[in-house]
Image 1 (spheres, one colour):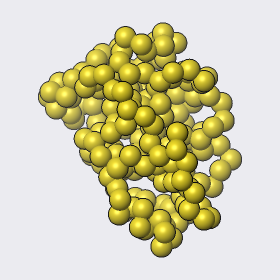
Image 2 (cartoon, helix red, strand yellow):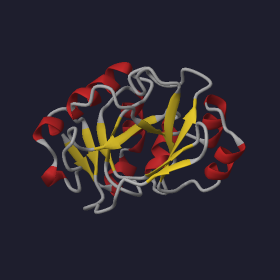
Image 3 (cartoon, helix red, strand yellow):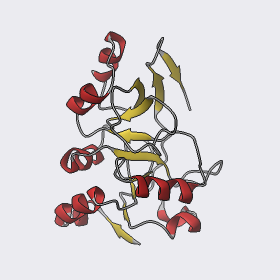
Image 4 (cartoon, helix red, strand yellow):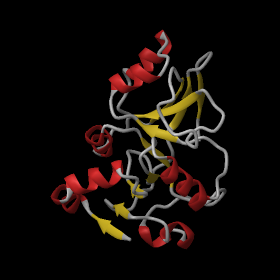
Length: 188
């Protein structure tokens, strides 16, 4: 497992983008906490994250590659449009889907998807890769999430291709805004 800082990421940016598109499983920072991610359209990579986390069915969120991608693949109501205007930010917007734009393992059995555009440079990785990127907390089910590589669960560490690291994160997970019916806000 390689740990890259921001400068190393910029030196190897093209290779990192290609490895994301090709199905690498990696840890990344966001504006809130560290996430574990992969190309959300790659079933094999998403299954690997489920195995590493020990999480069989709860849906994962994605970092959308662009606002256009969201509008092309999700139903954006008037209320949802207002929340999209608040992005980038520490929110996960739950939207109804128009299409099968992610692997079925991302949101098993659901016609909805959690969308993020974090206020952080990681959103540019998804944009450059032109794919949605899974983003879920780096932890095994029901355990504390990672704040630094030192507290990374060995079971997860063994399955990671690389880590994009920018120092310890002491944030809290994003606020969930369910926009599928009435607006419901879930603090975590």
